[in-house]
Image (cartoon, rainbow over all chains, first blue to last red; front, side, top):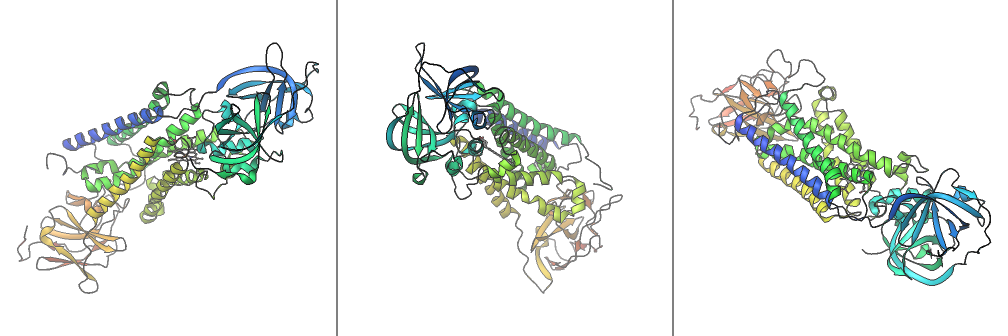
Amino acid sequence: MAGDGKDAFFIGYINAVPQPLGRFLAVIGLIVVVVMGGLGLVLSRRTADPGWAVTGYQHIEVRGILEARPYPVLRVPDGEGRKPRAYLLAGEGKYGVQSQADGLYGRWVTVAGYLLKRGTLDMLLVDDKEGIVVASASDVLHPAPPQSLGRWRLTGEICDGKCYSGAMSPGNGLAHKACANLCLVGGVPPVFVSTGAVSGSEYFLLTDDKDGVNARRFADFVGQLVSVEGEIERVDNFYIFKSDPETMRAAGP
Amino acid sequence: MSVTLKPVIWYRSKLVYDGVVLLAMFLYIIAYLRLAPNLQLVSRPIDDAILRMRAFGSCAFLLVSFILAIGPLSRLDRRFLPLLYNRRHFGVIACSVACAHVYYVYSWYLNLSPLNPLLALFSANTSYGQVLGFPFEIFGVLALVILLALAFTSHDFWLSFLTPRLWKSLHMLIYLAYGAIVAHIALGSFQGSGDPFFVMIVCASALGLVGVHLAARSVSRAPEGTAGDDNWVDAGLISTIADKRARIIDLGEGEKVAIFRYDGKLSALTNLCAHQNGPLGEGRIIDGCVTCPWHGFQYRPEDGCAPAPFTEKVATYRLRRDLDRLWLDRRANPPGTRVEPLPVNEGVADGG
Ligand code: HEM
Ligand code: FES
């Protein structure tokens, strides 16, 4: 037999491996083990940054007026040095809170849930039980009407507001599309993340220009770069993009 | 070899083999999930479930790539042959890793929604008409179904139940599964995080695999027998067959014959081992028997029968000579038919 083991003949059920062949196999085994360990380290280390979001899962209770825009939004008046704020609401799991909010629009409520923050977006993950309860009216203030910022064509990505605001990390992109679609079907508000800011914000609650809540219309475009036209409105700290689905098209990267 | 089927027979070499595969897998997963997160440059940690689905998914891909490379590698360099004989355990391990991947996708991306997760898998994304945003999960489903079917039928029981021919065809589906996995990654992960290094690893694995298969093909392609009369084909010069080795003659349509030279004699058997269709012609004569390179099943060269107490039989073929030129009858004898071996030195000088 040649010394390099090339000529060695090994049969599986015989335990003894001829020596040079044994060395060759040991080297192959070692290479496989080292390469796998190294690849695991390098591939995981190269993970893309999901971006900053506040996800301390701090439980809070906030009192304000519930509005349908058309997704449930909580308007919290100013006071004690705070500016008025608007919170987007979503439920636990891949659900919106439409059923809890039903019948309470226009009324003062206390909402209990976990706070997520990303950029100009504030979102409350409303508790399943007693998440929204009617509260006493406050005489302080009536929420300001939405302020129109005009018509825009924006380029960006349609995400589900909950995962993008921080409930998942990362919570956007095409790998996450099926998950995002499920959130939208469940009533979680869609969020448009623009590549350029409008009056300081890159994040917009995405509705269609009929003020409809038909997220299925966006399903084919979720997670990828699109461009779309629509009216932008500002409500306290947060922005609504009333887009015209007819003008939506895929945009180059 | 088997007289009856045993559940799984363990040998020390099998344990070492499985041990190395498991070690490589565990190191990959631990490096991915435990070591690397401390080195990631991220503003907030990646979800555990997402990191896990990526770790197990990419690990399964790498394992399947390696499994598919073993066959052609051992054609190119016989020292890889020992890696072949326990490939089935390797396959079952890869399938389990893929299941872990799917479990985390299921419990994180598909769960907790108004739809049942299985329904969600098929209905959440229906953008079949576009490349960007295509429901790449569907390719994962195809790959998973194949991997599960192969893992399930990997035991010898299924081999004899389905017959080696059918079993082998079924297990060729692994190539379809591999194609599906590559599509799954190209339409999913590449469009999502799109890490260029991962793209490079996946492309290099897939292209490397195609490369070794092509290289192995050109090595193993036997010269096509040139037709003499209708049934006898030219099998080349006797003198160029090495002692205790075989020449493989390709009769076309997947039929190959191994002509062995041993003890100054020549005998022809089918190239397909009765166990798992291993290439007998790449084996050797050991203790007077043709010995399959894959799992060591043995056959007497003159009648294709395994020595007692074993019962396997393979087809034999008739040979005849014209001076130093060998002729092979393409009509196979029923398995186990005795054929008188052809002496090498019959008045003619043996060129070797
Ligand atoms: C029911 C079947 C499957 C489903 C639903 C599925 C789903 C997914 C999803 C959603 C992702 C994206 C994860 C992310 O980065 O956010 C993914 C990635 C991946 N999947 Fe699957 N998958 C399935 C089967 C498979 C199988 C059988 C394999 C391989 C053997 C596989 C290999 C991969 C790989 C390599 C990735 C990329 C991981 C990375 O980005 O590092 N998948 N799969
Ligand atoms: S294929 Fe297993 S011994 Fe021949």
